[in-house]
Image (cartoon, rainbow, N blue to C red; front, top):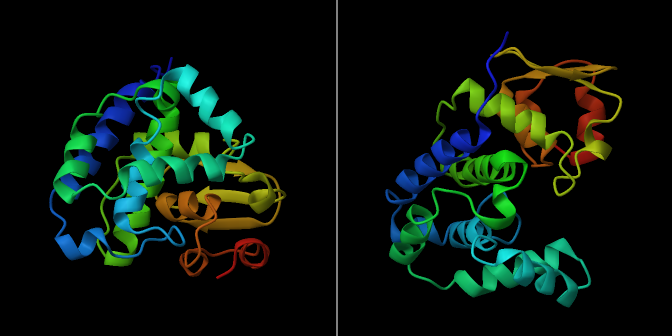
Length: 211
């Protein structure tokens, strides 16, 4: 029998790696662009941790305030934290290794998946790849394919996605193959990823998210 995966522990591992990486960034890098359009590095980090200390009551109040619009709710959180100094943002990351509130839901899968995607949003423009442990990647891929906030279904519907560097595959249709991290970022709708993928389904993916 396969042992159950402790996704909360995987989330803590991912957040620890992210905090350690953030501590290496220069002041200029904190204001550099990321794969998230219009968001600098500091904005992405403000977003990652902006829901941690709300509690479910304050979270509900924020969502009602913006008419249940997730993008507008995220913008409020970014505005609350984005002008903090790099040192303050690193401290914020280090103080929230353990997911709380919204990000702790689904056994920490929200924190793991959101944190991993945004970690790569920062690293990729810097040309700073890393080797992500397979268990974390598989858990993030399994979450990302159906997470409501990622809205992956219109991108991957009718396609078979297969990782070439670990044992993971979903779907039924034209094949899209590539490294697991590349598939994760494509599922999340990030541009600039499709050249890393191959197979007859890539053309469809390009139509849906761009090159």
